[in-house]
Image (cartoon, rainbow, N blue to C red; front, top):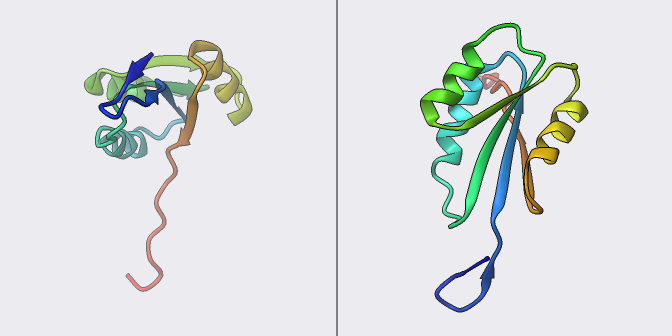
Length: 103
């Protein structure tokens, strides 16, 4: 447990990022997560049925814990990550950004 300056309880939070074969999107997602201001959080990347090692490499460059869920499916990846972490969990998925139709 930790307290902020106002004496209020600040729970720790786990940010679980579920991904599958999207290392570039994961890198952008981790860049955004690195700017979070919450005082107590950890990050876990759950790679769902990976086809290679690039996601592991991206996670390693950011110093993020990485695990594999070998069975395909977002629910499988989320459940795998939830078993690894604490009570307050935020789930993120790294989606491909769609280009603006006017670009």
